[in-house]
Image 1 (cartoon, rainbow, N blue to C red):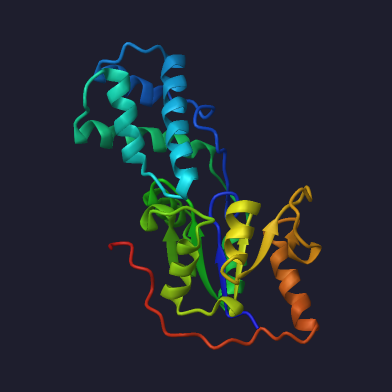
Image 2 (cartoon, rainbow, N blue to C red):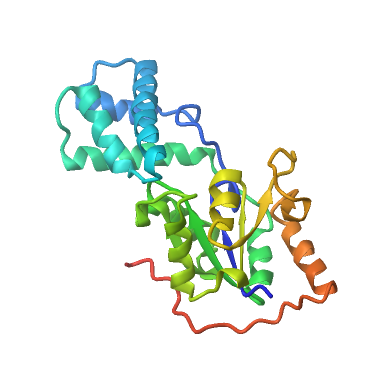
Length: 253
């Protein structure tokens, strides 16, 4: 019997472009010019991609997480030739994230879907992100914050999925047993392998059927989850749950 459902965020609860350049970054480039860079626009994009990929390689070695402020500070130092101030880093992060967010798309009917699930399950989010405020901001815009009992981010834990720490932290916060928890995501390595290694069953959104997962664990879309859970009822796996008393997630922390 499942009592708790954890969701990945990017690619699962929202659609997004993982590109670091294609969204268009005119405002961020103008800001960089005001800081004194001699880079042309394409040079700005190329250097940003190069620095980001250097950080990517480091995190893959031990599944550690880096913050947007860390990568931005290194990028700015290399692009303007001197150590940037904290205010410069903050301004660049704010500008870049605002433009990156143009690639995020919300799913029609998501809140209604979460409303229905929340009547039967405790819901949570476990997601990779370099900036927790990005996830928080989208949830507020979507008016979906209240659906989730816990939200665990890789930057908060300093570990990226599939590292077990991020999943174990979510279980700890919700006081949940892995055998009574389900994870829903869209990445085979980060979500499916990450969740199953700590004993959490996982549904993988894989409409192209590319991932090597059992058919019973594959979803054509997020919204297929309801019918799949309904099938479990018909097979004698009732959805009745015992909710644990948990405080609402406090964004002020």
